Each structure stands twice: as C-alpha cells, then as structure tokens.
Image (tube, rainbow over all chains, first blue to last red; front, top):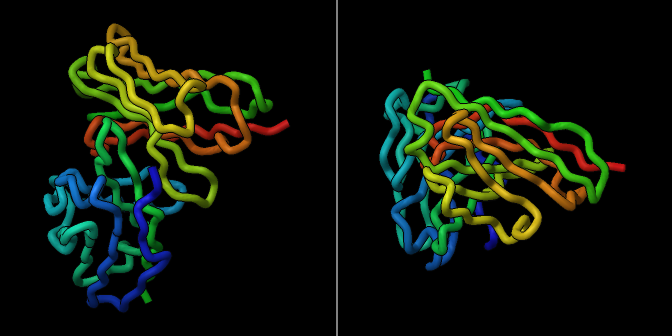
Length: 110
Length: 114
C-alpha cells in the first residue's frame, strides 16, 4: 500500500488560509469516508484534527475544516495562528482492514 | 482522563526481538480495537497493525507481516507488539492508538543497530 501524496510544505501569514491536499487512489481516499487529518508538533504525538472527511473532534477550533473530491482530500486552516505551525498528515482506510497515511506537510506560519 | 503509555523500546541488534507494551487507562479498554503506528526518524507515519477488541482478529501492514504480532490482555488493560527478526528499517518511534486514531500514546523509540 503506497502512502497518500501530500505537498512537502505549505505556508501562510497570520490570519491567512492554507489548504493541504492529500491524493490517493480509488481504493483508499476515493472509496472511503474514513479520511482523517492529524497535527504533529516536533517531538509530540499526532493529534486528530478532522475525522470522517469533515468532522471535528471536540476541542478542535472551527478554523480547521476538511473536504474530499474524488481521490483527493483537503484540509483547510483558516485564520492561521502561530501555534498552527506543525506537520500535518492525512490518513484513509484502504480496504482489507488496512490503513494508509499521507507523506506529511510542514506548515509554516510566516 | 484517557491515557495510553507505551514502554519497552530500546536499542536492539538486527535479527533480534523486542516486545512493546501500551498501558491504557481512563476508558473501557476491552471494548476498543487498537492500533500500532510507527514513525521513522524524520519520516511520516506508517500504520503497523490493528487488533479487534477481543484479540481474536489481527491485521498487519505488509512491511511487518510474519515478523510482528499484535496482542492484548484485557484483564491488564494492556496492548502488546512482539517484534521479531528486526531490521534497520524498523527503527522508529512506535505509537499505540485507539481504533479511530483519536487517542495516541507518547510513543516509544526502537533503534535497530549493530
């Protein structure tokens, strides 16, 4: 199972928006509503930010939103804040009781 | 407070074995499927294995199939990962996580090196 493809980096100034893509195939992202997004700060464990494509866990700011079209999922962070600077990963159920993660995107707040 | 605490990591020679543990608290462990996920230094996340709530069903990533075994002891609220025939490419931080990846442990580092 190949990793989902994400851009290595993305950036934006405080208050701006940034969108990260996550491209898979018709066997994973394209065929699953179990697409999630995680935020990971250096040396820390990943934190779930979005699940089931566009749902936010309790406590996650509504500045974070998710969507999906075909084989590509997206995470948008609106109103960028300094604490949003982190690595972001997507994941998807890939069928046959397998899961696959994305390659990761480093978000920089300029 | 829901908490997962991994332990058992360390430095091990290629070809040797190691067993990781993940102690769960703050939730009903015995009703939750559990995952292991790893992250090589400077790299992305890789799903490793999942086990059903009762331990009867296991699934593995192709990269570890036949070498790693996931198991659990619901009486001890503990998840395990038995890692055999370790290779240098198994070097990573290993995380345990709930089925939906909504709760993660802090991770334990495994280094495979001679």
